[in-house]
Length: 172
Image (cartoon, rainbow, N blue to C red; front, side, top):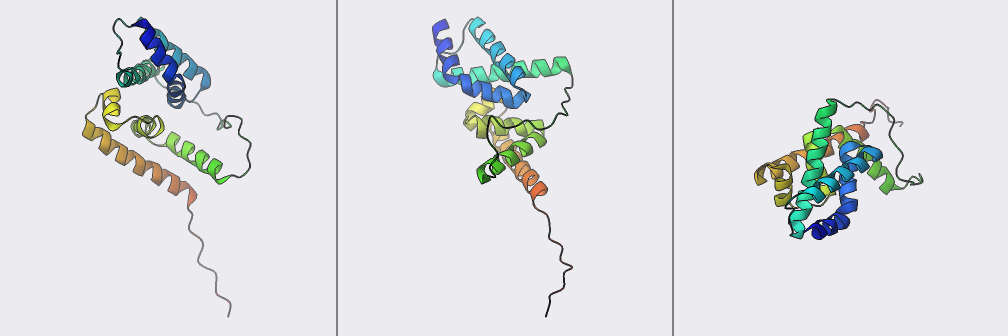
């Protein structure tokens, strides 16, 4: 049994770490969160054996550990500047600009919406799996995801689209 959960941890390690990083916004905290997940999963008396169930279980452990940490700390406020992307060189690449825009927009939407975007769109879970991770009904996942995507799009367009002044006169 222990061997199987180790395999599931190894197979999903980078996804778990990425999810933890998005939850915490900090590399050290993300590493701590993934370590906590590993310890809890390895200490579990009966972890799931099925691959999909184990993946859901591991993400749920991370989420619950993060919630516990958040509640313990009450409110964390980090007003530091936006951190540079992982060693990426700025070259005005449209993909890089889009990634920065989306990252900033995701950080600005409500936590409940950010969470569903991270689980479904970024981590790649199916709706049923997300419902199990978040412990909410399937219909709630679908409606929340729809509202989250709309909020994300609204946040992206609100910051980047500015009307052009129309008071110029046409020369004749």
